[in-house]
Length: 389
Image 1 (cartoon, rainbow, N blue to C red):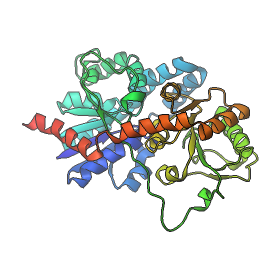
Image 2: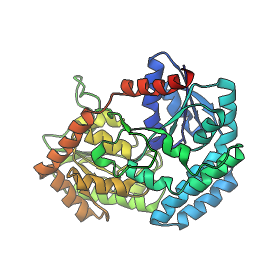
Image 3: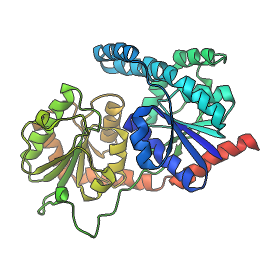
Image 4: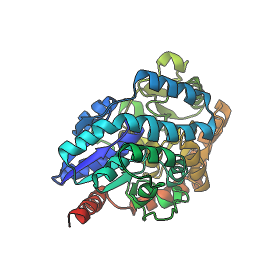
């Protein structure tokens, strides 16, 4: 069979799709990923074929970001869903995506949940479609309330009648979030969520401990605020507070910043911290005793899958939702105002409070009972086969 995946280019959006595409490719099916040029390097590393779509033009993108930078809190997130993901990005992607569908004739289309052109294009071509959640169900349910008008506009432009979000609600959803962190995901007409176990990391190599993980008998802390979030002063300031907090504790740490952050922006690097722009998280987690992160789903779920308690420093998007969910589950601490003193206290707590480690362990046990990626691949194939009979 032919399976077309569709994603926006951000690492937090493309990343959750890649294991599904790779699993189907391993089973011998033809796989193609539709995304903009920004996804090219990641798809090449993953060994996946790339069908390119257009980015918004510079004028449109600049005007959108001016509005985003002026918006605050939930207003900014509503704008991102309404005018970014389901508006500007979807309109830009639609022509090339429809051309790919017409030329390649996929049996199934799988999109990440913030890529909306594929939802409408699949409906237009009468091809079964599914989505992979990149956020918690609670946050995506909230976001979906802000995209209905944009989706109906996309449908009209594609020659379809508006449906008030019916196709969105009817999609089969695949997620790496366990039910205990997923929020209230009940939606009229929705299907049961298919929960897929996140990677449990790479076993510690017998060849020796990496230099960044040498602990001298001290607890090892992994800290990151994501790979693409370093453009704002707020994020740079949070990194500096994290470094100040860790520098006063009897721990060793790795801090990864992504390619946007400069070393100069971090200020003084404590002797007990190694800074890298990137280390695969699956290689880091097995060494760690705790994780400091912004609450993005990739880092959060990867750490919890190994029972690591987390300190969540939410910055934007779904991260405040995830911070509250982790706190409520007793698996970590939320630090909403990340000054050095608060962070120091939070790190000390997760390293010393057995109840938080037990809470993280309960989530790890829950995630271990979820379906495998191969199970998910077979469930996707069943959707395609239901169409062909």
